[in-house]
Image 1: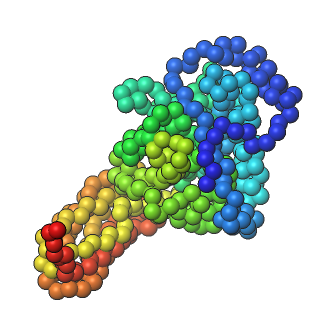
Image 2: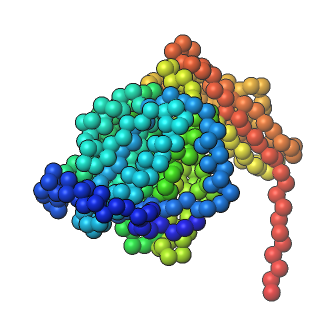
Image 3: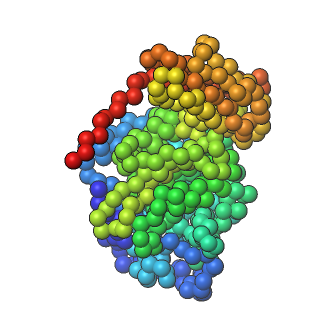
Length: 414
């Protein structure tokens, strides 16, 4: 994997650069004035050349068609942060055009917004019936201790705050957000002088994803790699779940991924993946997901569905070991309150349900009491709603318990 860097992806016409800078100066004479929020630096990584890339290229060519509408936004990253050359802005625009070409080849319609014609009022209007919004540009820090992060930086005179996203972004049911090259959005920022902790990466991704999920989106993805939006949407358009699409991308590593519940939406997931490049301090948290892992974008989102997190649980214990209490979050895809009931199928003496029914957003509590006999035990918990507005009114949690002997290794003193 190549290390990230502030590098152009090709040679660009000098006249194009001059025209872009001239337009920026004429339209925004206070180009160097402080906007208020602090900007992250620039992070962009070329995909590695490998057989995996060839597979992605093949999948793009063979991807099923989809009539999704996509809104693609590129923020201006030329100016006081990155110097006057403007090559990074043009890199992001070139990457956007390569991605949009692939998406249109799959039958999607794409509304593109490039600086200086990337005003929030136009973007939010275009997003009303869109299934996907993509943003490439600076990440934003809004101050505080620790600093709050989130939003878009469109141009030197306009930034979009988390409040604007949660209150004004109204997309089609089952929509997702994809952030590309955005500092803080995956965890790490190019301005981090030292490696950040897992807790800090989790905090940043939770804050960056929160307004999108509050606006009703079902998924949030963030990556540093060029070409990521088209690769991800190819997987989702083929019918993969959000989890499968996240794990299908070449930057995913099952050995390094960190899986959590979203702190603001316990029924949703928050996953972080990272790399360890030798010339960067610490781990680089550069690939993230937040949302409902089991949902597919190809599904019918005109009606809500139940969400359970987690849906698969595996435990191990010694014979007649101490009871273990499990907590499962119950929610709905549209965030609305729904009543539900839970029951085991079939009945198992080693498992009991403590919370049998409750409004959504509450916790289903299960107690597992290991039996005295060795063996592999499995069962399902069925969570059901009688609300006819729901497309699927029953969701199951699979539980597996391995009862094993505890093997002690004797200690030998030297």
